Amino acid sequence: MDKFRFWKMVSYSRKIITKPFESTLELKDEGGLSHAVKYISIVTLIKFIFPILTMFVGVLITSSVPEVMGVILMVVFLTVIGGALLLIAIILLEPIKMLVFSFVFQRLCGLRGSTETFRKLVYSFALFWAPWTLFAGLLSIISYIVPRGDIDNALQPINLILLLAKAAIMYYYFSRIGMAVTELPHRKIVFPTVSSIALVLLLEKVMSFLIESRIMNGIGQIHIYS
Image 1 (cartoon, rainbow, N blue to C red):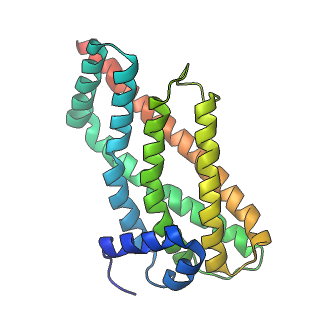
Image 2 (spheres, one colour):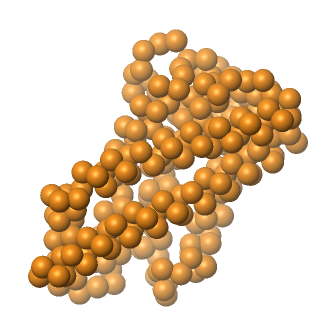
């Protein structure tokens, strides 16, 4: 097993994106749990700008200049006072989601005859999870750019389309990566893949709500002191 090298794992991710099944067969033994967690943590740190950029774009499109300035003040407030804890929380979210996904997937596949190790699964999933994390961040920005009514309503068409698109992409890649690692046929992979994706999307919604609540609390404190 090689030492962790970020750019080497980026090159592995490019292979996974183009040929998920074949590339997983080739790369699944190249790393382990520590490689996966380090890789996802670094990518999440890079992605940290997306929530701020998403919020800023949304306010810039829908709000007045004073409100835009309020968002800028809020970012400064979060960075100086509460940003450290928020940053740590966001960085930890992706590794936690990936580990939960991999654990549930492995357990469900184990009930179907797989004896593959958690280490190989989590490492193989991480090679797709990292670029997917960045892509999902871009999708969140699109949800603000495309005009719609109540942006807080999860049943709005654009949110539903993005959710279905995310689920479809995740299923395509994770099912093929899972088949390559566990050596199970597709029919035995369907339930573990769908169940793991559903759990992670639910976890993502809950965590996003908690983070947004923390941000809105920061905005409220800014209004109090202004």
